[in-house]
Length: 173
Image (cartoon, rainbow, N blue to C red; front, side, top):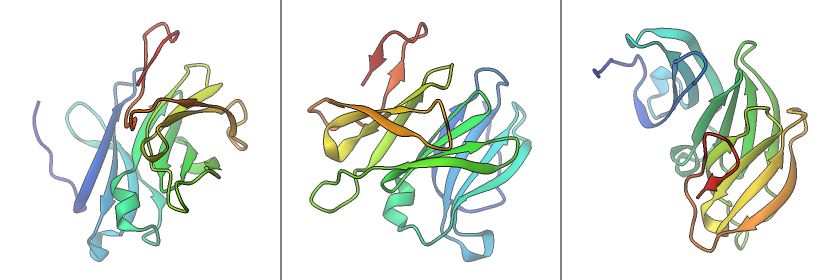
């Protein structure tokens, strides 16, 4: 392991490793106006070199507290990003947003705080841990342009992370 200087000034970082490519994906929230505020997603190889130029995920209009809680999952050429009260799905090759799901439930009018995210390899479902709701939302992501709520699993324990077993038959919260 080593360290590598970033060209921006990240205030928070969410990391995922793509199992297929071995690339390290970084979702950063920036505060410095000179380096572009908002959320940025980039990929680095095992030397730390940037191999996918930063993708603007969201502008600085999103409240800092929501950007700091954002998470990323990269799977099968897609990036799933939680921010505010939504999950956005991006195509990595085109650097375009494919679709987003906005949570309609809220905790007394505040954000649901979707945090951890996991997705099936076949891209049919995504599991989103929502801390404030004490639940995991299961989203149908067959059509990434129209992710839809499939079900809500009550956890009762402020979930912040989810992980699928290797065989994808069990979900750990």
